[in-house]
Length: 138
Image (cartoon, rainbow, N blue to C red; front, top):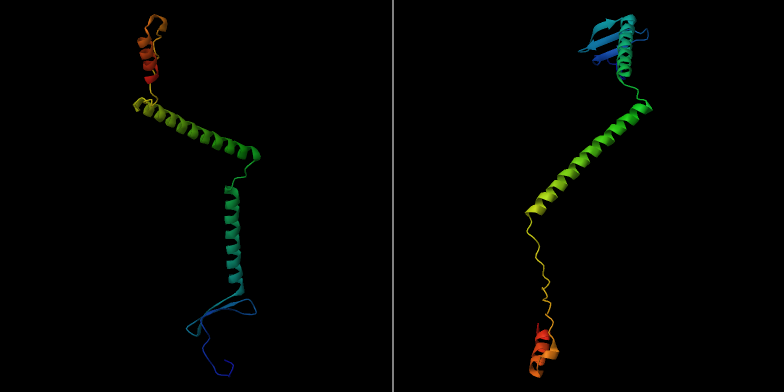
């Protein structure tokens, strides 16, 4: 009955009664009644399944010791060192290869000729002046 006292069909669903039994309603009519024991057994089975799953998870999870973790870290560091070493070797090989392919650098500094020494005492006055001018004009 609703609040106004009219009889209406019960909405579909499962209803637990005071004695622990279960009332299943479908299309406004009682479709099934389950005793309290059956429901308790179903709940117990679910609980047992959950316990079994929990135990499986706990058994499958591995407890790591400090030494095991340190070993794993050391292995990771060694692997990283090897990887970096190989990368450095590849880079060095590439640098060597490219340096062999490079053209020799050209110096932009002018080449200075070293003047040959001139003995001015053996020259005439005109030759001395010409030798001095030649030294400074180069």
